[in-house]
Image (cartoon, rainbow, N blue to C red; front, side, top):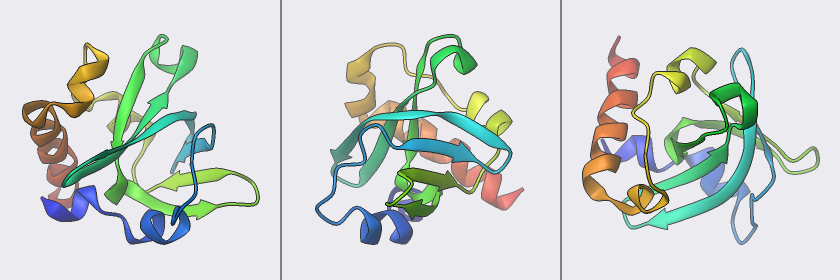
Length: 116
C-alpha cells in the first residue's frame, strides 16, 4: 500500500512548496481546493475542501493519486474519477486524518481500485 501514499509527481512538484488552495481535479471534473497537506509519516495526503460538491465535507486524498501538478495554474490532477473519490471512506472528525486506522482503510480502498 506504500505507493498510494507517495506520489512522484506530487513529491517533485511540491518540493518546498505549499499546495494550499490549489484546485483539485479528477479525471472527469473538479473536486475542490486543497485545505492542507498532511505529512503523516508513511501516509502523506491532501485534505481537500470539496465544498458543495460533497455537501460541504472535506476529503482526504493520498498523494499517490496525484497524476500531475501545474504550479503556474495551481491545479492538481488526480488519477481517479469523482465517483471514486465520493465512494472513498469519509473521515468524521478532522483528527481522523491523522488516525492510522482510518488512513489504512482509505489506502486499501484506493489500492483496490488499481486492481479492479
